[in-house]
Image (cartoon, rainbow, N blue to C red):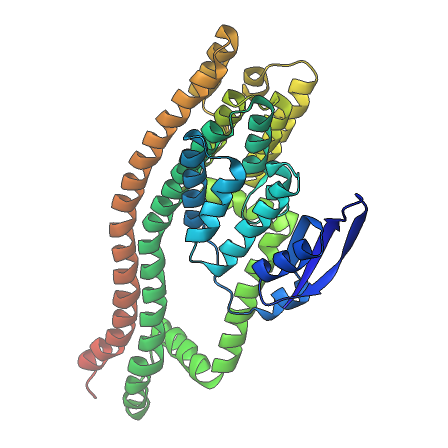
Length: 399
């Protein structure tokens, strides 16, 4: 394996290059044996690209490591030793390599926040900003504990939303599969019967039989169309206009829309409260709140709030009158700004919206279940009626 390194020699001169080694530990030993002080050491990108089966690092891994670091730092263990302890017990080889890189960076004199910033996929801007704020106050252990609780809450909320959406998704897929089965297997069985009788078929039956015939004879076009539709949706969401449209649809859905709004507000307010409590400058906190909103329209408005606050406005003034934010939320933020206890108020409000999300999830689940059953019944029943209409007609006119 090849590793890229940045080091200083005993005279303080800076060097960078690559070295061949069997592991990060082996590369570290080679460089130190040559008298170098390691500033950065990471696997070569070309080699990393060959690791197609590298084990993925999940949010749960990051939360666990953060929690462990917080405990060790609070008990008096220094950061380097704490990171070494995480590396020693980590089973995921990918995460172990990353934690080793963090340790090497800290040992080389780099700030922990700067070392974390080199891995944005695992440690986002919010994580890095909170760590950076704690480094100036010397409260890294307390901050890491706060970050782990914040991340755990986010993970729990996201898991509950996914679980609530899993049922309608499965039902939708099932409805599509049942419809395809009826159109390609059941309906064609009746076609010869109708043709032998020379019947004048009802319009709904003609339409359904035409769809069945095209589905069977031009199946490749249907598959190509489905793939194109899915690809267009996936890639369209990555464009600014596509993301704007999709995010508008999500927050305006008849049943799930209010739930998505509450999830976004809960996440945003929790992030803002954590930032304010941790001493992050207000403008930076608002920008990071926009980053984690997860919705184009909320993100856009949070950035507008940051601009207006930079111009001298208060947060509640910038939020007032916007239909995306409930009046109660604006009033609570106004009270927090007026009393100088904005962080406390934001924490209480985020707890309130967490409870609202729980209620909304139960409501959505209870409403979607009968709705999906109705849709399934309508599809199956509709196709059944299309088949029965000619039979009823045949009974009325047996000749």
